Image (cartoon, rainbow, N blue to C red; front, top):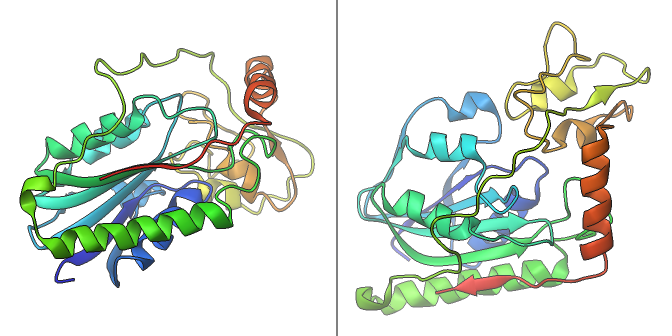
Amino acid sequence: MDKRLQLLYFSATGTTAQILKEMASGIGQIKKEYDITLPMNRQGELAFESDDLLIVGVPVYAGRVPEFLTDYFSKVKGNHTQAIFIVIYGNRDYDDALLELKDTFEKNGFNGIAAGAFIGEHSYTTLVGTGRPDREDLKIAKKFGVDIKTKLSNGDTQIMKVVVKGQYPYKEKVARPLMAPVTNDNCVMCGLCARHCPVGAIHFSDYKEVDATMCIKCCRCIKSCPADAKAINHPAFKEIKQFLIDKFGNIRHEPEVFM
């Protein structure tokens, strides 16, 4: 393949990166990765050319692309750049997120040739999408990459337009009360949570202080804490988590791919 394969992803809990890298292994050698999970990596503009092939991966938040990411993606420009759009959702639904991601990039000079929706363990609870992506998910991701490589090798640009599921206007954003992780006495002030926070919501002067107006509830700080010192205890969060467990804890959704 004569395209320069590049990855662009936000992956707070690692599942998005895992899927993209497995998919890329079926296409060819990765030339460059842009991990935009941390705020410092979302500062400057990015530009891609017609001889690049970009795989873009994001998590689904309440059926949409996270708003702070759509804001950042306005600074990512293509020049008739072929792209693959991937969303990862927590076993509930991806609603309009894949269409939104596709629309966002195609307005900025990218040509979508393939897309997919994969499942990752839900960030709120290990009881929904448990252990996903699993071996079968990764197998599907790699085969999808192989199929994309074959499509590119055929070189028929007339069939390169991809159609995905979703509706416009997109699903209305869900309004929820402000909530953020709280810190218990287990905290050893190591600072991992602040260094790993994707939106800089945790204060570096006091790791127990979390700005609820900034927090995106990705639970990265909770999962990365070595002392089990952080948790979201807000009643609304507990209610949402229990709803997800009751409705989707025993259901297995499968990846969907579009070419």
